[in-house]
Amino acid sequence: MKVVVFGASGMVGQGLLRECLLDAEIESVLVIGRSPTGRQDAKLREILHKDLFDLSSIEAELAGLDACFFCLGSSAAGTSETDYRRVNFEMPLAVARTFARLDPAMTFIYVSGTGTDSTEKGRSMWARVKGKTENALLALPFRAAYMFRPGYIQPRHGIRSKTRWYRVMYATLGWLYPVIKALAPTMATTTEQLGRAMIVAAKHGAPKRVLEGRDINALTSHRGTTESVTSNCVS
Image: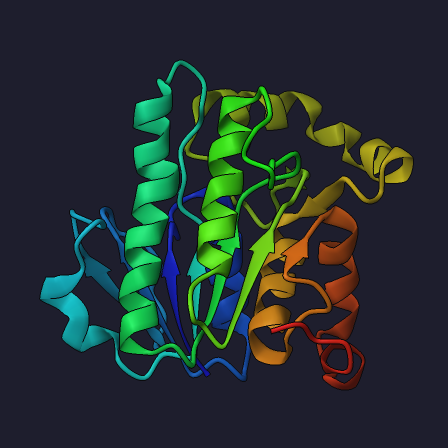
């Protein structure tokens, strides 16, 4: 399996990249981003590309991929809806449309977040925008597309968020993760679980096209099998 990852330097992307490099069934991992990941691995190749709205100059490098993982996004804090929409709607759609044109037989996986508004009409700006993004991605002619909506994500294996206030939050509250997991098991996951679940969906499909926390954690139990996932797969 050959995959491409966008957003590999962020917390979710770091977790996914680690799991991709550990997975024996993933032959190669292409990372496209504006800054290097700092990782070294025989099956990892990175392309530094500043303008993610336009991939035309690197299209020759994008052939023969089985799955695209889009983990890139920005916080809504202190951001206008126009600016937030540009990064969280226009950018993923620009990337996805390129891949849908080049190879519609691939699987596209997008990470949004719990509370995303599929109606696109709610009061929360970020939720409306992410809902619009999900809906637009699901309408593209991919073999399969899955929208992941994790809640609280506990970083593992030395992974750190790029956002300062997230780092402070995890440093302050990280010890509470077992409590959070016990009280709200469907709302909490780890970077490792999330990465594994995304890979399982790319390999074998998933029972839903929009996956909430409960669905994400359930997918990790299928890490070595196909039958129970593909039997109800929606594509």
